[in-house]
Image (cartoon, rainbow, N blue to C red):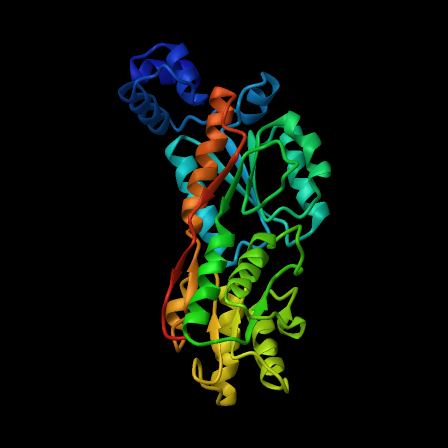
Length: 330
């Protein structure tokens, strides 16, 4: 079995330089780094994670926790994390919480047991007070969250202005009765509060009233979208357009509309959120708010690596732009 000394001899470098490369430390030229990595590959050398944990060294592993690995948004995010981490010599451990608070805390324990150097969490399920104690065991970066009391970096989209632009587009298309669908609650705090505010702002500026019956909460899946379409079309006083919380919901609505003979957008305009691949596959194609999940994953990984190697990063919210993509459904 090859040792670190064997790698040093094969690369023609010192053991110290090899160690720095293995631990992804600074002060190593790209040329020397490439020599070490090539020697490790030729010798099939793999650092012992258990031994490195005992020495308090990095495991070169980043954990990423998402609610659902099959969701297109989170799949794109985790792919970007994996690629960005790989380019820096890190492995990625992908953890699916399934929206379960206990599972999420279990994955956070990977920091305590030194099986992961840092954790990226998308769509946090637990209250921040339950997550805070884990920060002392390793850096945590939150994605797609807006938690004012958190003491860690947050990567988020400008969802307020993205939603505002979407509602303004529907108003410009002549709609005054606009429904609103969210995966959370229609509240001033918590998840989706920025989207809620964007909807309210656009409606208020246009002098349009919000009908509580047109607010649809806790909707997540394509099946939810199918059921919502039927519900909306059966309403006596129904909206003429619906802004949905995800492309999955919107796609479900369009699928059901096609089955029921409801014309989109003539009978009901439908807008999605996320600009996932399904937005271009569905007929009619879906107007949606673009959220580049890959950009979020890349930024989150860059920030967590800064924390790991420089022990510093701006403890701030990094806000990425959200843009409207106009297609045929509106």
